[in-house]
Image 1 (cartoon, one colour):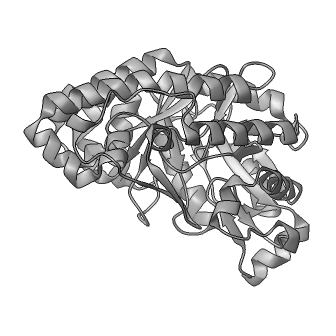
Image 2 (cartoon, one colour):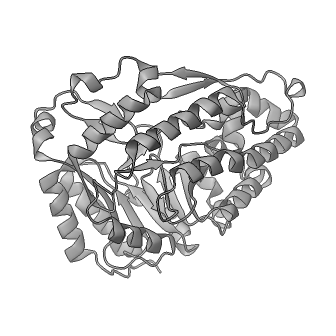
Length: 389
């Protein structure tokens, strides 16, 4: 891989992470700015931002996006923008160059018929289901307009990228979250209260759709060894790697979750090689027991919500304790405070959970900071057993 020096060693670390048997220091995602763009960051000049990659400092005029659609659908510009990012950043630790061809969070909704609205910071799907009785079976259609557009975009990006960097599998999403996108969250809540059996059947249909959406992307985007990366979360694994979630779970009871969501997640988790579960928001913590019963989930990631604190608070230990007790690895995003705080927060978690099943996702930093962080981790966090066993 052109922009990653220690890719073979990185793949070994990732493979062991999924087995909860990592040796040495924890896995670290550290993307560092090279000197040629450091002055832009130091001066605090505005930078173009891409959600899954980071900040584009000093982006040449010819690579600026002309509008929201151009930001997501222009394959040539997407690749050249990411090449610029790779040339101006260094991928330290277990970070690796992987480009996103996402069509928004939950792109299965578009394949099923939702209209797509491009925005600068995301993609929005407009619900189209007004009455379930008038909608046929939700099933994968290889001739669907947005499916064909998305797959063609991914093919072109992969062709242009070559072997220089990976192209990540997009955020397809699953279960009730897709139903909420095509129906609307409030209407779906009423449906769940009035006709739970109908919603259960629709969840089953979405679960059956998922492999038909995932597999073509996997076959197209897998690396030379059959490994795959999944966007935003910066994860790689040998074989089929996925992120699963249910954000809608924040609005339903544990009983409904077990009846409606847990079977779908278990079926999906058993199907794939490496599974990260994205737990979004404090309201979803009540479903941890049901989630940890799913053996196919290999690792857990917790997000406190939009603009909330990062994943290092002691308050979240109740989540990580349950995950560690269930034998899961932990994916923890670190961003609260400054550089010294990041080290201190990670230190606390390493001492508690050990180094064999931890992954820390750090903010973009300077090259000097990145190397200092890695050196500190190598010296102080290697093969730590942890107090929580």
